[in-house]
Image (cartoon, rainbow, N blue to C red; front, top):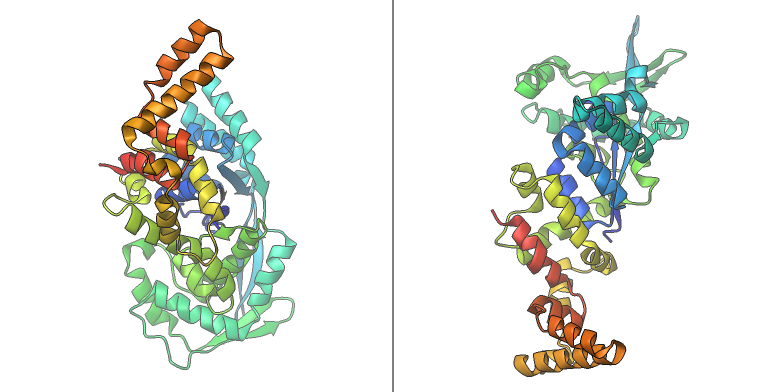
Length: 394
């Protein structure tokens, strides 16, 4: 658990990645992979900062993969009706080198040295990928799967236009038209559904059509393959979760298990503080602040990774901090005296007398938190109480 997770809108080129969600994943997962296209990566850099993202990548906490093409649904009008098919789109504007140049120019400003540093940093750090034939084959098969399509279309309509009454006997029947594409016979009233869809401000510039529904469905299929190739958990947006829920129950269980545990953990253990996501999205904490927090969280993430698949995270946490070591039963003053004198003796044996005395005096100034770590080793509450809570305070 909590080893790695994949984030991203993947095939949705103009969508954004929630910076607060990214911050939470960076804190709790040992490795976070972001998959993005041109516009999404530009927006992410503007939100988080180029230097901050590159530093997180250098720390080994973050990996960025850039998609140099995108999936699309083509539509051809014929004498038997509209026919659709799956394809990919690419262009010079969508290449990573072009995107990295735009990012470097924006972030570097008039400083040519900074522009070069950011450009070289992204070119060296970001991995390139694309929707390949293997990925498209699975998405293409979905276009012919009537049972899956009808369930996915029903869920998509309920999410995109909840005001529209989906027919109880909804059908969405694919029919191959040789050398052209696939024609779909359906009883959905797209005129009525589209009127409701376009009444929303965020949807005013688009139209609800069979092609749009098919684009959402095939993109979800392709994106699951991309995320699964890294053998990681992955975060799905609400619509994609609905689309694949009927046939990907096991994958969805894996993708939501960590999220549910984290929500319960934050609610119980960090109950009087804001969530990390809220702290970042509100602007009160920046990704520069987050880098320091992520750096302090390494042992905490190792502890998270060792928790069992079926365990309750908050119970594991409480159990781990409730274990009583032999040192816990000693009176505080005698304990401090014993440990400091013991360390002083060791220093005197291993160093010359003058240096040994100096080191012994220096050790007497150690704070209680350091002393606790020396005596009993690291525990997850050290990170929660000493680092996370102060970060989340308003």
